[in-house]
Image 1 (cartoon, rainbow, N blue to C red):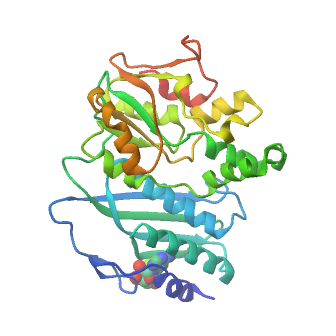
Image 2 (cartoon, protein in one colour):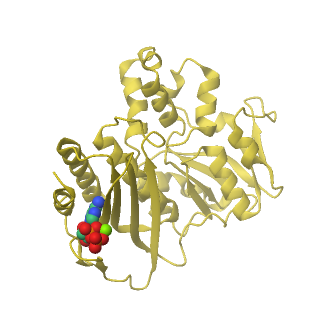
Length: 325
Ligand code: ADP
Ligand code: MG
C-alpha cells in the first residue's frame, strides 16, 4: 500500500453531500458558499502519545479526532458540512488504514459531513489534523464572551468520566477494581466522545456563552470567565454524578477528574436566569442531561464551594492557572 492507495480508500469513506462541487482528487476542493450564514472553520490536531495512547486502535483514533473537532462546532452552535484530513504516519499498514477509514466514514456519515480533501505525509509518529468547515448563523453563534453576572452556569453529561476511562486504560488494576460494565462505560466515554451538536443547535440564540470541555471543567470555565469579563461560582454538590463515577474508589481522584479531567467534550454554557424554565425542553431536544452547577458573578474570580457551602481550593494546576483574574 502506498500514499495513493491510502488516498483512494479515504476518497470513498464518506457519502457525497450536496454543496460539494468538487471533492478529493484535484488540487483543492470546491464548496458552495453558505447563503445567509457565516462560514465556520475549526481545526484540531491529535498526536500519538499525547492525545491517544501508542498502539491505539484506528477506530478510536478516528472517533477521538472527529469527536474533538465536531465538539468545537457544537460549542459554537454551528452546523458542520465537510472536513479535511491531514495525516502523518510512520508507515502504511493496510489493516490500520481500513479500520480507520471504516470508522471515520461511519461517524462522518452519521453527522452528515463529507471528507473533501487533505494531505498525507510520512513522519516519525502518528499525527492527525482535521479541519471542519460549515456554517453558523451570525446572530446566534455561541461565543465565549457573552456570559453576564447572574447567568446560570450549566453543563451537559457527566464531566470526569472520560478522565477516569483513560485512568482505566493506563492502569488495568483500576479497571479491574470496578464492575466490568462500569469500567467499560468510562473507557467508552474516553474512546468515543459524543460531540453535542444537537445541544449546540438548541442553545443557539438561547445561551449567552458556550465552550466545550476539552481541558477540564475549571480550565474551560476560566476561558469563558476571561472572555466575558466576569467570574463564576461553582457548587461541588451540583456537579453531575453517575453510577460509574460514584463507584470510583478514590474520592480525591474522582473530584480531580470532574473538575480538571479533559476529554469529555461536554458543553459548558451560560443561560440567562429567565431561560431556566426551558431546561427540560432543551434536554429533550438535545437528548442529554443538563445540570445547573452554579452561576456567573460580577467579581472576576472562580469560586468553588464544597458540599458544606465553604470555599475550597482544588488540587489541580488548572485551577490556579485560570482561576484568578
Ligand atoms: P498535492 O501534491 O497537489 O498536494 P496530493 O497528492 O497531496 O496532492 O493530494 C491529492 C488529492 O488527495 C487532493 O485532492 C487531496 O486533497 C487528497 N488527499 C491527500 N491526502 C488526503 C487525506 N489524508 N485525506 C483526504 N484527502 C487527501
Ligand atoms: Mg498535498
